[in-house]
Image 1: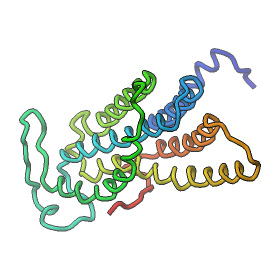
Image 2 (image 1 turned 135 degrees about the vertical axis):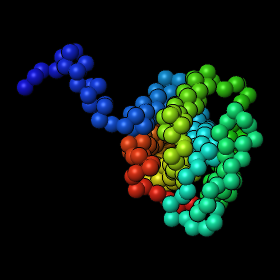
Image 3 (image 1 turned 90 degrees about the vertical axis):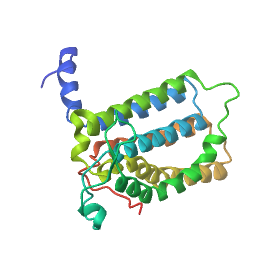
Image 4 (image 1 turned 180 degrees about the vertical axis):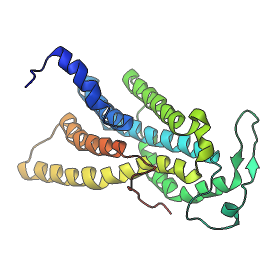
Length: 242
């Protein structure tokens, strides 16, 4: 058996990482960054919640925008709008045309997301900006935006691949973080909160906020890495937002 060494690590680690998708690796990296932020930069719950909600908003806006330019019809949808050539609109000559049927389709699919936004908006509005946003949080948000721009470029813009896509393809990416949020709320936030609250009451102890954040972040990272390992266009993980 070969003994581990620096040269062995250099050969093995890239090969191992190549077996995972970029989104899976980034999911792990981003969650490690959150854990480091809690430990090193003393991020609190509000910082993490705001960053996560900003990420959801950025993903949604970017991929909904990409959906506007997708000319292909949506599978399993009937009607004149989807059985004929789409009506193209090009308000900005430097950009590809958008399609009216796509605008209608996105609006219909966005009702649930708007309801979610109405629920989580108070979290953003109550974020304390008096001492200023920490530089580490700003860097994290910028990194999130850059990464999501790279994803849009990879899946829809590079080589004008949007021309072979339907608006539903783009919305699959847009809704993935919402699905992720629902899974986190159901399988992480709710059960862990119940356990922690019960433990604190039963033992009459005060659990530190930093420890609590770490208890939440580890399983959240597992869910995010798992979601990241899936291909939204081919893997069957879907919550219907009709």
